[in-house]
Length: 298
Image (tube, rainbow, N blue to C red):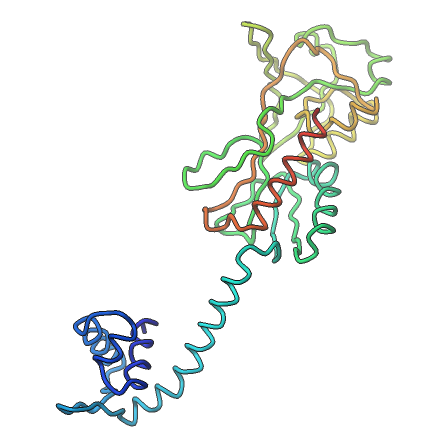
């Protein structure tokens, strides 16, 4: 049944006639008549006994009216609540993000966001697998690289986030510092894997020169945090997005190598299934994360 047809039915019963109900709802008598006929056809029964001067409810109509009034009253109350709270920063946000980015970088920011907006609750999914935001219980996905699906909404968080080569000082002291990406052939390279595909082709650019180096190493993981930990433990050279290792670089736990060669850009986006999901809470969270990331990368 159509809710507008039910609304017309209740108005007709309360106003005592179809013309009065049409005036109340600001629709034409023809539209009102068609609405009532459609509802009766859907239910397979007459709802009013019509005469030339009046309309009165049938037994079926009285039963339906008793059910419809609280239903429509509840819907109107819900609409009023939603409209009144349309700008509220509250509700549950279900967020999927890469494991290392989530644990190492974003988690403290989310704690601060909730402290500022206590009406927000979070449900986090930390995984390097690309979440299906159409089928999984995910409102927001933080992803490196702009999504290819045209229907998705991609809000930029960090547009310049190049990959960097880095290693622990202890590793570099033992094995030497590569002067150029081609020197990686003599080094243990720590690789990341997605869906059984190993990312062992590392790309770099210096001025007009672009190269791709196929690297090798004794460790591969499908968890980006593990790759970072191996690097911190001095077990090899890693090729990570800047934001993932910025704090480690700042405190000297990792050092960049081949700094004059620029790695691939890995822009970070907040991805949603459609624009209806861009709520006040989502917009406020995006602004908060952009502010934090700018400060971190400055």
